[in-house]
Every structure is written in structure tokens, then in C-alpha cells.
Length: 615
View (cartoon, one colour):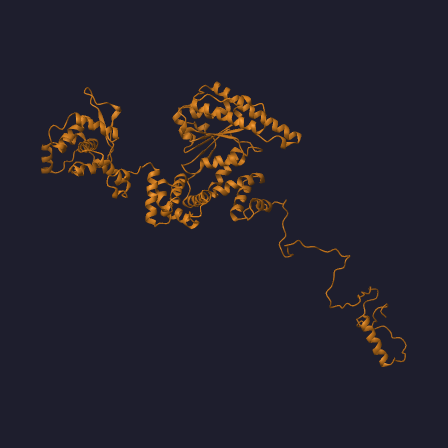
């Protein structure tokens, strides 16, 4: 029966035979059960259905095993069948706003831990059509400067290209904005990151166009010599000769002859690199380009060199024979249209707006953190500031006490922050102590020197800077010099028509009896005398007021004139037109002292200054 299969319940029975004894049946069942041949009665299947045979020693409730002939469907490690399927990388994926989303491979290659900021940067670059190779090269710049300078970086990439496959879109362009907005840092960082050959010239260091052109020729020679050494070429000996110091190139033909060899050498190296690529051996010859970007930093100073300097520089790519290899980039605080360029010659521009409060605080905190990590000493005894202290310094210190005076200028704010970080006592002190230290650094940065060290009374060295300046100035003056300084100030701020009324005895008695006299010709909207700008006054009038204020005889003489020259050397008086004191002409002087110094002089001389300025 084991070979024929299980019996069907509806099949006709065989002819009845005598039943075997019960003991024999029990013995057969036990033997079949022990040998695994006993099978339960199952309902029969339809005719023609293959019989599914069961293996010995197996029950239907036992777990099933995969047949060796059936291929096993293997699952990738770390993946579940319920996980969402990955889309095809080749297909273009679109975000909700209709922009193409960055690929997963690019996001993984950009950073091991993908953050939202990097995804935002990559989406921004891909949305503006930047290829994948350009995105990977621009991403470090965006991570360094943040979202605030992403449009400027993209503008530089659009106009300057990438130095290899994408050429420059214009022979000249400009980047302008207020001081401390990162123009020079972003431009130079962009050129270095993309490997674009460039030279930088500081326009504030030159006094003439000839000196500027000579320096440009020398920088191009140095750049071509460095490219020759990198290419391991032995035919660049003519570039090793430097230009004589102090030489100027004013004429266009001499300037073109000076830059011809460096530009031709760069063009030859670029041709050799192209030949290496065509032969299929790009590694034997380093890639190079014949283009050079000339960065004119502080371009607002070009108007100081002459009237047509900007026009001459803008015409270089057109006038010079090899001018197509030059790309001019002007970086300054003002656009070239305000520096002397014609409106139709104004090149494309990349504007750098001022930072907002949040942007300046974030960049400042990042810069201070990197400064502390890089410049931290190896000594364990030195306690470095924590991130919480640096964040508090930026938000509660620099943004409140320094930004109102220097603005959001990162150069000034970063310098002040570094000085505070170097003083742990000021960093961990109270807000009042931090405020005093930051205000002192602001005054030092803006050019206001600390005069507290010149005070004779060292106990008052912690007074305000303005008060210390007044006290230090007063300690170095004699009574004659103080009276002369007060006379010059009154002569510079009082009309000549009021001299008789203010300084003569008859006029002063009449003024006390009748009160102040208002002249008909003077407008009622005129400002007070101490609020008017100082006017030049003849020296004879200053000496006459000096004589009336002293109320003594024999005050005029050689010693008084010597005191006048001493005040001139101290910078408190200035002669108009640099006229010297002589007998044949009457010089004019202007008082350059401030009102606090004059008030201190009047207080020591027991003179009521308000009687002359407020009458």
C-alpha cells in the first residue's frame, strides 16, 4: 500500500475476506508506525492529479525546507522588503517646487553625515544649472561662507567660469560692496579653490599708472615662471630675469613688450597640455590654462591715480595683442561708474550687501571657534574658552557694544573678538567689565589713542578716554597757551561784528543794561556759535582778543608769538595756506581744538565761556 498510495474512501471495496485476528492487526499497525509507513486516511484527489508523496519521518506540521533545485531569493544585508525602493539614478527627480533634486551619490560624496545645510546648498547649485563637478568644487566655499554669500559665489562662477571647461563670460567684471563684507576673501578663495591662475594688485599702494603697470608685468612674469617650473620645462630661462626696482611703464607699447613673453609662455604651456590630452597621456603633462585673472583690490583708489586710469585698464583686453588672455576683476567699495568709468563701459558686477545681525553673528562665532582651535597652545595649564563663552561674547558683547560703532564689518569685529579672547579675565568677567574692554578696543581700532598713560595722576587712569584726552592735553599747556587757545576758538566762532559788543568795556556795559541785541540781518534759524564750523581769523584779531581776556598790560610780545608757534606744532592751531608769521602780511589761523578742551581752559582761567558763546 505504501507504493500504491493512500486509499480513496469512495473506491469499491474488494470482496470480503475473513478478518484477521485482532492481535495480528495490532502487531501490523505497530510495525508500520515504527517504520514510518503509517499514513492517515486523506480525502482523495481528482483523477489524473499527481500524488504528492511525503518523505519518511516527516509530518505535515513540520517546518518546510527549501528544495535544492529551487533558486534562493537572497536579500541585501540591512534591507527589508518593506523598505522603499531606490529610484533610478539616471532618471531626473523633481522636488515639490519643480526644481531638480540632488542625487544621492552626490550628497553622500559631499559629506559623510548628510545635513540639511549641505542638501540646501546642493539643491541651490543644481537648481541654477551647475554641473556635478562644479558643485563638488563650490560646496567647500558655500560651507565656509554660508547662505549669505551663496549668490555671490554663484555669480563669480557664472562670470569667471571654472578655469578649465567653462571660460570667462566677460573680459572684465567688478565686485563691490561696503567694507568688511568679505569681497576680497570670497574672490580670492573662489580663485584658489577652483585653481584659476590669478595675480592680485593693491591699488592703494601705487602712486601712478606707470608704477601699477610695472607691478602687473612683474606679477605676470612671476606667474609664468611658476607655471614653467610646475610643467618641468627647461625653456623658461628668459622669465628668470626680474624687472629693475623702481621702473615704471607709462607707455602702452613698453607695457605690451613687458607682458608679451609671460603671456606667450602661458599660451605655449596650454598648447602642450592639449597635445598631451590628445595623445591619451594626460598624466605626463599637468593641465594648464593661458588665461590669467588680474584682481585690482581697493579699486576705489584708482581715481587717485588719474582721470582716465579706469578707462585705460578696461581697454587692455581690446588694445593689447595678447589681451584676450587677461580677465580684469575690480574689487572695491564703489562701482566703477563712480570711479570714472563711462556708463557704457561699466562691466558686469557682483554686489556684496552688508551682513545682517544674524549672519554677522554666525560668521563671527565660526571664525572665533576656528581661531581658538588653531591657535590653542599645547600647555594644559591654559584654559581655553568654551563654545558657550564664545557665543555669549558674540551675541552679548560684540553685537551690542562694538557693532554700533564699527557696523557689521567682520574685519573690525574679528580683531576685537580675538583681543578679548586673549584676555581670559575680560572674557569671564561681568557684562560691565566686558563692555569697558570692548569700548576701549573700539577706540583703539578707530584711531583714538589712549591718553590715560600720559596723566600725572595715575589713580585716574581708568577714566573715560575722552576725559583722559582732555586732561592730558591740559597738563601739557601753560596759562599763556591756554589763553591763546581760548582766544583762537572765540575768534573762529564769533562774528567780527560782535567784537565791540563782547570784548569792549562800553559794549559789555550796554549789553548788561539792555540785554542781548538781536541783529536784523541775522536769521533766527542760525545755530549757536559753538555749533558752527570754525572760520579762519586774522592773527591780529586773535591777539587782540587774547589781550582783552588777560586784562593786563604788556602781554603781547615775542613770548606770545612763540606760544602761537608751539600751538601750531601741537596741532591745535593751523595757519591757512601755511602762511608764516611776518610783518608784511597778516596771516590767518583756524582753531582745531574741540569744545571740551576749550571749556577746560576757560574753567582754569576763571572765564565764563557761556557769556561769549550764548549771548
